[in-house]
Image 1 (cartoon, rainbow, N blue to C red):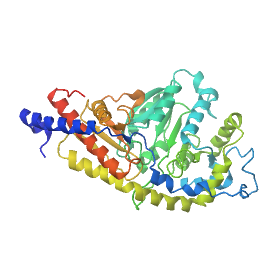
Image 2: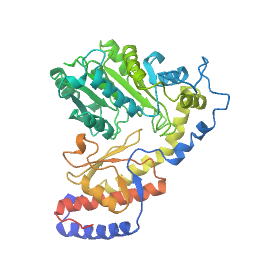
Image 3: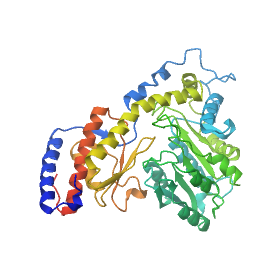
Image 4: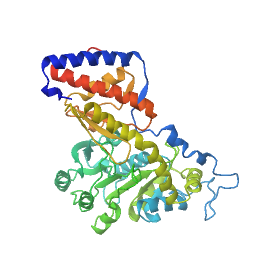
Amino acid sequence: MIPYAKMTADELSAIKNDLKQTFSIYAEKGKKLIMTRGIPSEDQLALCDGLLTCLSNEDYKTANGNDCRNYGGIDGIPEMKIIFADLLDVTPEEVIVFGNSSLALMFDIVSANMSHGTIDGKPWGTQGKIKFLCPSPGYDRHFTICNYFDIEMITVPIYPTGPDMDKIENMISNDPMIKGIWCVPKFSNPTGIVYSDETIKRFANLKPAASDFRIFWDNAYFIHDLNKTKTNISDIIHLCETSGNPNMVYVFSSFSKISFAGASVACVAASVSNCNYIRQHLSARTIGPDKLNQLRHVRFFENADGVLALMEKHAEILRPKFKLVSDTFRDELGELEIAQWTTPQGGYFISFDSLNGCAKRIVELCAKAGVALTPAGATFPNGKDPLDCNIRIAPTYPPLTELKEALEIFCTAVKLASLEKLSGETFPV
């Protein structure tokens, strides 16, 4: 294939006419194909159907005799804390286990910090206009939390080794109103990159102007490797401790893409001091989490090794889907010089960059042909991609046959939008 930029006007026009016809055929089929969020497929959910039946009428107590049907246990049952601690390489005393959503925990901690401050600072909400650093492309739900609390977001570029640490170090050392940063350190959403050991070490050694600065370390994909060769990252909690910043980081994780997305368990790991402070807020918010659900997870998985064994089965389901995306993009777009994309080794997403100014148009065209994508711009603060080029691809939910159709439509839309950009002529849809 010849790159579009090297074709003559007549060649581009001929290709565009063919693509119009192809696109019209797709649009007439009335397909409904979903590639919006990172949703586990039905095959993945079925891996944990045993959770529905693993407790009996007489099995409702933890090993220390606590009745999971009753109140109490505000920070989670001991057995579930041990599983998370083993997976995250921390101690059970550094773990709080709650409900099904780590996002809810992030929201709660931001809310508590806004109203009551951290253990070493005044309430964020009384200090003026606070700011968060937002490595981008990033996770739109992080940005939604900032918008909810009227927190100013500052975009930070993200590279294959992690966020731009030079920029981060410079900004937080000079601006006491920067109170936090969002991080997805392993198989980052949506780029799939993994923070390097050097990047994580630099995070642990940050010298913020604000004593109440916090790293929100969303380790959502901590065991979500696609391949048998596992990718490990450094332990940020204990690096912060040895660097003299023991309370600077909160680590979040969940089983949302391990067991049932809507009925899993989530945790926050942090210093013992931070955990004690978080418990104070939780005691005002609730009498306790769903301990029966935590007990179900303990009975089903038994231990951390049981969780890791299940993740191999998840990988077997997901691996062909990610390969299909990579192969299709390579074959359909690889030589046209109109796009770039990531090839992650785990996680749930692929980051796709079109020609500048084409992302919204691609999403619009796909919607007309029945393919639902995450809105263009969602991976940047306030939904505004300055280059209008980034699209988050979520290949996990559709069966392979539907994913193949969706990718064919997507690639057609990419080609058509690129030709419109190069020719200045829009195809009416």
